[in-house]
Image (cartoon, rainbow, N blue to C red; front, side, top):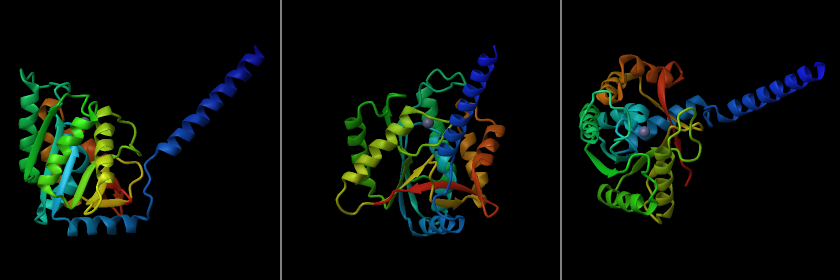
Length: 251
Ligand SMILES: [Zn+2]
């Protein structure tokens, strides 16, 4: 019996160490100083006039980066958005008979709040956006050539952030990253959201109300005031300001 308890203690201790190690490894940390991250964020906002955001579902863009995009549109930048799927397998809290159509409408509504120039709906199957990588890449190429972005935002396919994982998120980000790497010249800056290794911080404190309103447009997802607030509390805080954290890919 004594041996049993000592063995159990060892297992528990071992499990605890693994848990602690995983937490330490997976936690979100800036890879540059706070001041440097904020400086990079301001440079990004001041210098970008044409942005392309590539996400998987209606509401992704608002959760992760709507504050940054609002700051860009306020500066006169044109923001184009790609939504790879209609999120037809997501929650349907409004009992819509056609969830895909409802979610497109909600995305348009959110887009009007932030001021997106245009939203491209690819209509790929939900949870399988990157199953046919060649198809997704072809569609991205088409929009990319049309928009000619100076800066591109997508999910971080490598240093994704826990606890939320979705194959469409990492999959879409991976296809965008591969495409970007294949470009020879005139490669735009590439930034990842939902990253646990950010190096850029956008101060979104002045535009939080717009972000809240854009999030609330996604009523089919049952996004409550509370959830919107939770999202705010989930933002990082640097120098007393709430920020959206991004990772700029190194060329
Ligand atoms: Zn999503």
